[in-house]
Amino acid sequence: MARTAAAAKTRKDYEDEVRSWGFSDVYTWKDPPHSGLATHLIVDGQLTITYPKDENPTKTTYSAGARVDVDAGRVHEVWIGPQGCTMVLGERD
Image (cartoon, rainbow, N blue to C red; front, side):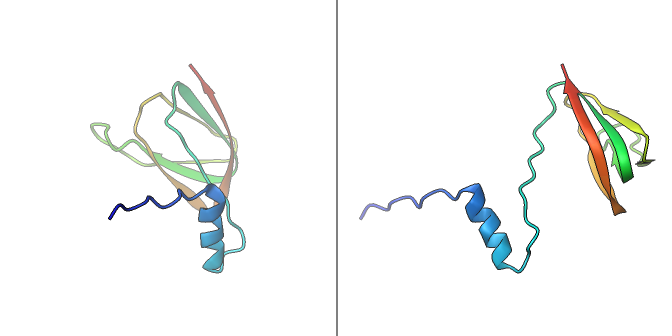
């Protein structure tokens, strides 16, 4: 007996599923790998970043007005501060 593949879920399907769990503010976030230098201008709140593959990784916290540059392909981890973080991002090759 041949099995048929289930139809692939759409973004709306996934967002509706999350809404069914009782969440009213639902959105999809996509953060693709950076193909070039990426910059982050912190407008409000805080962002903490580390580079776990560095020889001696440390965490650095940035606040409003700070610029954070991340080289293409550089693995990084980010934590957003308790008040959130608003930032403007840019990329270039």
